[in-house]
Image 1: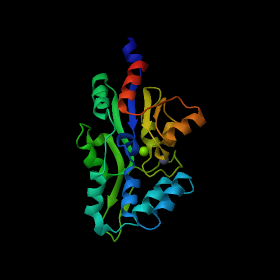
Image 2: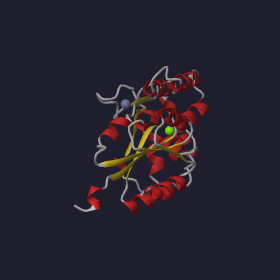
Image 3: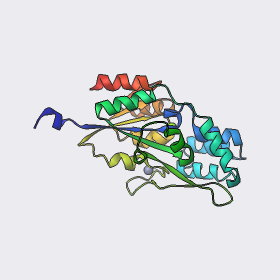
Image 4: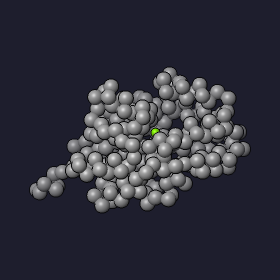
Length: 223
Ligand SMILES: [Mg+2]
Ligand SMILES: [Zn+2]
């Protein structure tokens, strides 16, 4: 058995909001449409008084489903992609690194924004949406399994655990509260914003980054 067979397969789990995109799209939608009570819900999620699933679900439930097209158009039109993202995808393809988008965001903005990039749809995990009622209802096709009690909504830990540590070098890229539980599981974290503090507090193996050029450079050095 050669060294190549013994080396672990690298796999990246990359957050969307505030990571692939410069801004958090859920917060941007709420700031724009200003449904009464949204800001308290954001604060309660950040301070962990309520779960991400509960907070996101309740925030969108404040918006009438009749505003569907406005909400979608605003979300997609508002997005800025962080520098170096295409280069990271190119690097992963070249180096045979498996790349997944693991997003706590919603299908109606995650898929359209990522359609500009060569990422297979089955490598994108996010939450769903239902506009058929009076208000927007978020649906959770990737909720926590029996091993996670965090009520994530989109459970990154369940996806990460499906790639056993014995065979994979697991790498998480993220920025905030939806990344906290996953960050505790992986071998390496690339962190921005709130996630830097969590990594510091828990003494995780992490690298701060500003853009994806930093990530590519560091991945190359880690080889
Ligand atoms: Mg994020
Ligand atoms: Zn979970």
